[in-house]
Length: 513
Image 1 (cartoon, rainbow, N blue to C red):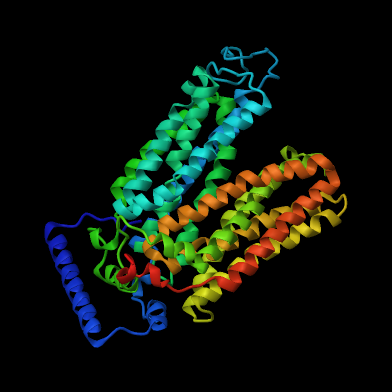
Image 2 (image 1 turned 60 degrees about the horizontal axis):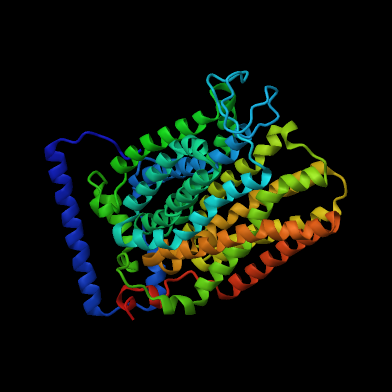
């Protein structure tokens, strides 16, 4: 994975000598270029994409591919921890149990359970408050996580967030015993801990992902989110039935803590500090990213960011896309149940297809985007806008078509599943455009746009509830139309003002201005 080997002392000395020699040569070239005068801005941005790459660029055993795998597993774990309560709460509140367990009394005669599992008499409203409390904490640390990862590094911030999330997951059964308020507080803390993970990941990628490989490396890592959700949906139910719901949190939390040890041992902040990276790979990564500058300091160009149309284009497009995504994710089961009278529990394949399709879509989008960039078919900005258009326009079209399908539940399920699958194409578009326009501030900017996305995720289900509450059929049609219209507006704004080049305010020599 990381070219794992056990080098002798002489091997390490020789390798470090070669790396030091490469760094000295690179510094000399940069000095010569500065003396000769800087290249035009457009050429500076395109140079990393057009430069020849070493023969090791596609090696599956390269260090950057190892980082991709480690991040994939880390995001897999983060999302498994995140959704564990959403699954276990069904068993925690199973008031229909034939032995009549209620409150916090242990259910000692629960058939199929290895030990006592308490069942609580929480109302549907209380359950909703418990589950939604995660997002209040999650939204508060997005920008903060990005800022801190820029100052202290993505490795310690992401690792600390994942470790704290794992420890807090272990405490869920105890918090539930203490009362609803303790569980809500624990969920807020869990959201605070997980809120730093994604921004810290972007800070790492800004130091590790060459422009020609950025899409596939980041999207393969991001696919861990949906695969982790899918895995948790399958495994948590089995654990609840065989061991009892507390073991969902004990097992997931313990595995998360163990994985954090691997994270701190395997991951390095950047190629320059990695002890076993090959000299060729180190030179390739650092030379391809040399134009973007180092990580930001304590000050941020907030005024310039607020005036940046390319950044606003990403933010608005992310808000609109997340509106549609969360609307589908949270409201699709209700629509199928109330309008189509379709029970997803009777068809496990259709229940899991959106998660599998979304994960595979992320990977394929990343591979295709980098292929087009490497063949110079399109530039960076055109690639980002193309994949954003496909990932936003096609799902919007499917939503508009749903109210006119009639009572064909199978066709509707297929369309909605396709919408959740194709929306993953934005993973090679707006979702990674932050690194294109401002790699030094990628983590912080991701935190900002993610915060807007979380707001959309909170508002969208509420808006759907208000529309559907007036009239069932008309309400759902209007909800789909609103989501499609928002996506179309966000896409038009992004195509008009999106960019694929580093902005002036994001360059190192103007960062403090």
